[in-house]
Length: 488
Ligand SMILES: [Ca+2]
Ligand SMILES: [Ca+2]
Image (cartoon, rainbow, N blue to C red; front, side, top):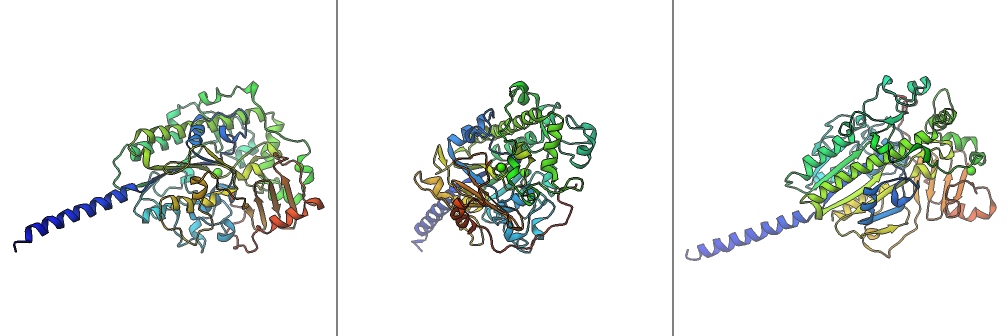
């Protein structure tokens, strides 16, 4: 009996030490700030895609982290790209290629664990605001707290009625392409939905005491169409001085009809070559190329402003030192290159995306030219949080590139637009293969605008044969309702 007291004290001390250790260990787990930007191409300061683009906040994030200069999406369209990122699966392994298909409809993904869901099930509080998933917010499966609840997260964007159109009031465009518009948003910056998302994130997450580590996803909607931004962002780009993207007058002449069709961004009844070319034809006919370029640049700078507010608030918060930041866009965008306004093609402008990681244990100021994909986000974030990486994921853990300055690789990255139509990109080459056997090959080191299609030239046959090895041989059947992917 006489030993009871000391034993109790020792037990209490041990319990205290164990719980302190566990708490310290759980507190050490990094938070994740996951910022997705919609339709942002390489027109950001550190990627230099447009010489006039002003993105001071993305620039400072790149300086404090690792910037990938050769990162590509796996499919250049919102829903399938986001599905691929958030489930860690290639589109050709799930059948999700189009806008309308809810990813849980794929037998492959029905029971799959999404990236936020994995963090949630690992003890994180997962928050979503803005456009993260596309058709299916997957709430509450993926999220502890969702600002949009179970609403379609694609609803985020300034309301758009037909009478609201600012620049493009052509009846055909207004009827079949209702988002195709641009101009000054005059209701005040605070009414921009992205500002509401940023304010929600700051108030709900950074300014609150978090009992668990958090995974906060903020999905910014700009610079997606309509290119509406407050006046101050248009003022940054005076119309007279706008530089147009580089183009070549006969650029499309070395491409077959099938290649043009597969890269048309979705076919519509009146135009077998689809939205992409139709939009540019309209812009050219109405002499609006400078205006739409200005509006896209203004939208990019507005998105950058929102990113700056998130970074500022995180820096001011108690979570500043223990949060990993990843910034990515779901795909690129053409503003006239190859006579395209849009995405959903296998060309560099559509596939290339900004991708920056920063935070705990990540190198500062590294610029990595290794070919990487958004498919790598899932295993990388899981790896950075020191959680086990599932073997079911298709991507690679980029941690070695984020933590070691000398590590590099040159394994090609894959992009797809539909069954049988794929493209692979390494440091120097882009090779694309189409369902009827047509091919494209570009030497991007010497022809950065991809003007000259080298496929068919015997000199390059070795490169073609090498790159062809990375084109998928087995493809999951397409889950798609014909005619429904754009018309809504
Ligand atoms: Ca998008
Ligand atoms: Ca060409």
